[in-house]
Length: 267
Ligand code: BTN
Image 1: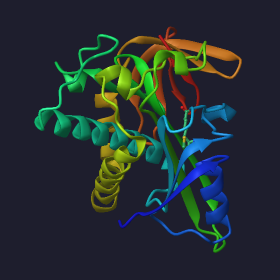
Image 2: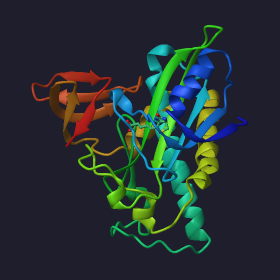
Image 3: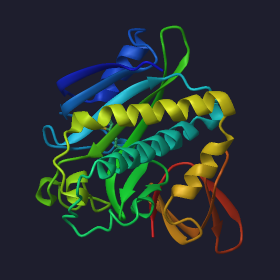
Image 4: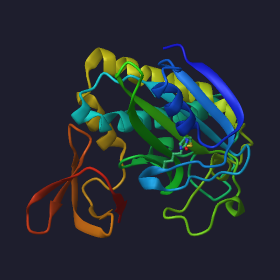
């Protein structure tokens, strides 16, 4: 898919901007809106997403997913898989070129890149158990009544520890803290979009059944006892599956099976 990239110095939120364009019929599939800084960046469940100027790769892209509406959550998982693979490929290429990784926080990135990067259901990218990035997928209807998804991605690139807001729910990390490299947020855009393109082609060619399988393979906590916070409530159980519609499958202590569509995992 040819991506059309608009880069803004500052926007309230790349998701909000692109969603409004799509609703007004002013955006096409593959349009990408990226920014150096967002004044009102948004995360899942109405949360804020903050990053200082020029420190993160922040972008949104418009997708018309070939998915039934009941399985639309799979698209968020697919975007997570794409970002994970795109980042791994980018870092592996640097390593091949002889770039030396200095692990500022002592992560074992050079030893086993597959073990370091994980996906946390539903939409977090983790590196050595810390939050490296997040994904916010939002659906809407365009001017012709067609359902679209705006997939927004934020990856922490240049942050030092002191640049992060204190008391974040999941401890944060950045590519700088992982590798010691001064990567430019713009340099990640092409590798991440290329990976997204590969994954979207696979969705078109093979349908969606592989998505939950691959996500399960790359997720943290599968098979473990977890606690899922859903609004004010929390449920404890064993994380058994990622379902074919993207739900988390949990076996409760009384033996019943529950599907969860939205929430936060705690160990
Ligand atoms: C989360 O972790 O809750 C998801 C964070 C998603 C942040 C990205 S940054 C680019 C895009 N624009 C936004 O306002 N949010 C997403």
